[in-house]
Amino acid sequence: MKHFTTSLVLFALAGIGLLYVKMNDLEKRSQQVDELPPGVAQEHMEEEVELAVMMGRLHHFAMKLHAAGSANDLELARFYHHEMHEVFEGLEDGRIMDEGKDISALVAQYGRPSLDAMGAHLQEEDSAGFSAMYDGLLQSCNACHAASDHAFIRVVAPVRVPNGQVFGSHR
Ligand code: HEC
Image 1 (cartoon, rainbow, N blue to C red):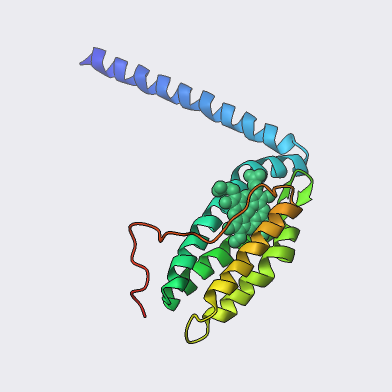
Image 2: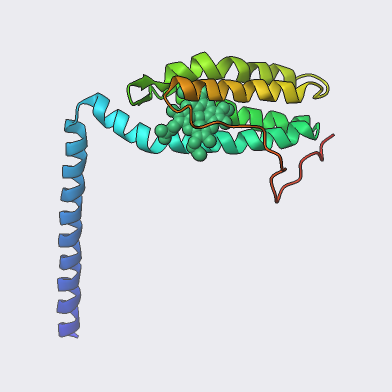
């Protein structure tokens, strides 16, 4: 029993030691990040992770917005518009720089007006004219891709309804 207690104590001590080393390492790493010039740390993190991920989400919501609007499912369309709006806000507030381009300013300049126009349109009673409105929105996405040196990324209206979800049930 004595033996067992001693092993238990030793084991616990080893665990605490390991934890201490790990915490030290984490602290050092966070110091290293702090020491980077602010612009570099921010640009590196947000450019690599946030922008691509946020664009992917934007595209995903945009395709569902299309399915909902085309099915005259305004409640669902408003939901996806709202999700896109939140992504836009995150992009605008994030002070994101990408290869020397001020992405946040470009989003406000190119993307925002047509997203707001779409929002106003969806407040109407039915979705007549949705398709033209949607094309205008995607044109502004592509204009911003061109303005931020990514003209090779061109989004178009989807030709199929996303699988696994009902669009058009709230008419
Ligand atoms: C700043 C203006 C800007 C606006 C507005 C914008 N984008 Fe982007 N988008 C970018 C940039 C820059 C990239 C490249 C990101 C990178 O380098 O990781 C990108 C990348 C993408 C990608 C490629 C990533 C992927 O997941 O395949 C898609 C798709 C995309 N955008 C869709 C859209 C859609 C849809 C809209 C409009 C609803 C939109 N974007 C609006 C600047 C913009």
